[in-house]
Length: 234
Image (cartoon, rainbow, N blue to C red):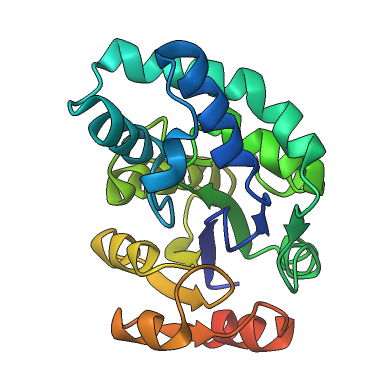
């Protein structure tokens, strides 16, 4: 074991799809606080952080930026509602290859897995809970760390590196990002990470290829291929 692979996974579109539970919870939260129904109708959340999504709601319907306190209040109400919308979502499902890939990677001593998601942490944990995936991720970088995806990934990497350095103080660490949007790829590159893009979310293989990921897959079902990538490095 010459090095440790520190892998951050995106959530929506990479690990799972909530079946509209997140957007539904934001709609209810915005209506309860600001009196405007269906506020997500003009917002495309794909690949964006929760902060950016909420600010789009403010701009679209109130024609201004939300203040820091307003954004916090909306997200607080959102996580109060989200457990219900996730539980009741008929289209919630794990993406192809998940959780088999996670189980495979967890069995490797040279792999540490975390989250790298635009979801605030409470929201991410609620979604992962229904799929039984929280067991795989003890740390991560979240939308509650920053509204900028590269910054939140960096926060996740630093948390993971602190854990690894305590257990393996002399090992080198390679950074990896696995996500389903060009934003994941771009932010991963900004953090000096190797990037694996998967076309199970909103971006097609062609769109993802345009972002120049290090590796590109249609799904994450081929555990052996991903293991071989890690074994040989980049």
